[in-house]
Image (cartoon, rainbow, N blue to C red; front, side, top):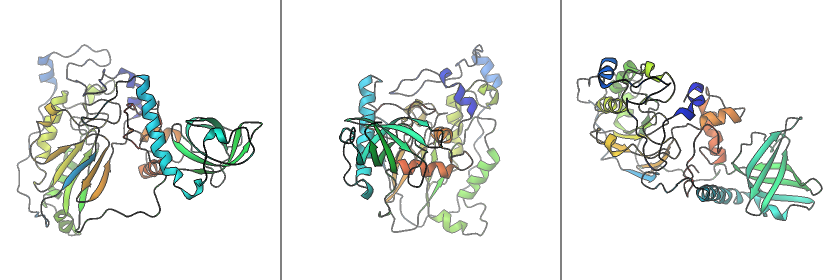
Length: 402
């Protein structure tokens, strides 16, 4: 998760093209310093870590070849140019898709457009996108929701069924009563898309394990070299601790690394002083060498994060072809986020930059408890609902973060 220091200097990041990868190199000047000459770069940056002596894995996978399908990924499908109409289509798509989920909730039976509940008293049910919100002196919140027909203010007191952790740009259903004189709905229940209680889980006909290892930041002087080598020893069956390790490894079919696979260049002021490798391409070359020690029977799936050489705005495309060609073996490159089918089991891989926004705007969310943040994403059925916060969002025709 990026630090607060990184957030403060996002405006200093390099220019980026919404439809392509950022071009970053060791010639990039940061913090007003004069760029280093090629000779200085060679003197300053040590060579990439030498590849470890390869030891043939002692693990034999029990099943046949692993089947991986990429179900959703922005790579190659970006359509946005950043014009006003792009933003309109983006939010309209988000609203329509999330409204479809909410309207199927039993509590929202009989929901009507916002225009139909304004200027009349009595019971009211409507679905809208949150435009703004403000806290009340008694601990509640007043927020405005909007749909295609109009806007209305909603008072949520914080009592049971009426949470106050509302964030802008999420889509909610409101059940309550209206006060026509104040053009206000008194909420009795706030309904979110949520995850259906009754749903059929995606399963395989055999045991399956997948490993996750995000934020490895190759190139940083804080890269955990010893721990990485231990991880490779584990994957290759060279450190069996007798606690079912063999059974896990025999069914381990994929390693997913969702973002910040390298530390990048020019991400925040003073970063160069924290780099062992101060060239973005050499960082990826070093990563490619490290991944050579992953056993051949394990598929590696790489997606980018906010430190990688792609656009900052989410959804992010996969790493560019000139970087991909550095890697050998079974490496699959996907965007961020990406929905992946592994042997019939759907896996949603997301780097998690929006954790910053959830921690800022939802009181129960903390960096120490990321699972709480993930639950809030699932409640809203959106990975990064807040527009204009710490997470840059690209106005694609379809909201890929729903």
